[in-house]
Amino acid sequence: MGREMAGGQKQPSSATSYTVEQLVAVNPYNPDILPDLENYVNEQVSSQTYNLDANLCLLRFYQFEPERMSTQIVARILVKALMAMPAPDFSLCLFLIPERVQMEEQFKTLIVLSHYLETARFRQFWDEAAKSRHIVEVVPGFEQAIQAYAIHVLSLTYQKVPRPVLAEAINLEGLSLDKFLEHQVANNGWKLEKSSSRGQLVILPQNEFNHPKLKKTTAEIVPLEHVTRIFPILG
Image (cartoon, rainbow, N blue to C red; front, side):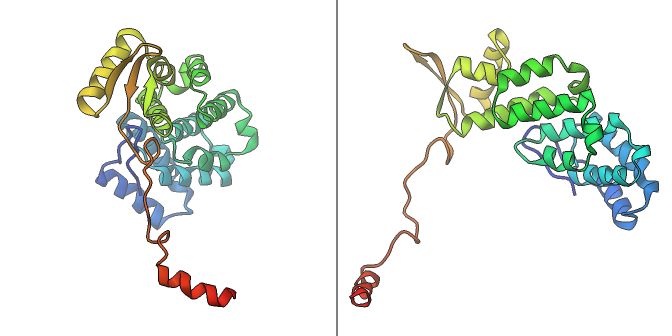
């Protein structure tokens, strides 16, 4: 039921995941498993694992028993969902949270952070996250997951990223950025290039989005004999 996330979150161990799946499968509408699901959220936080389906199940329980809702657990679920971007997990979770709960300050902040990420407004995101450390920093790996998402977004557009653009997107500068780039060059195929007009450029690995190639597919190739058959029909 869990799945591995590109943002650095790992799939939970098979034993733990199986136990939660078993509870949900056997008692999908039994509120007695609610504490187990809440504990599982905390386990995901501490172990840096992620299980969307189990978290959605818990949020559905909260819908039926709102008096048992833990806003701390809900906030952690939403932070983990943010870390899963570009997957639409945050919206899936938010849909199950009552509007009155969404109006609480911590949830309004998380919704704003989600909007900044969806619109690639990374400077505003990091500024807002810095003011909300008490919400996001309780979940280990948050910064690294968002950096991975920012790089994913940049790689959809850029072959060569100006250093200042990358620095703003991943919220690193100076020696920290230098060390980050050294690691990417050594391990992930990045390259660095100097430009007289734009300073240092970061060359990202090619993909189908930032380096499109013209390809002829079978659907685009129409045999000549098929064309000649059309003319008599048109005539």
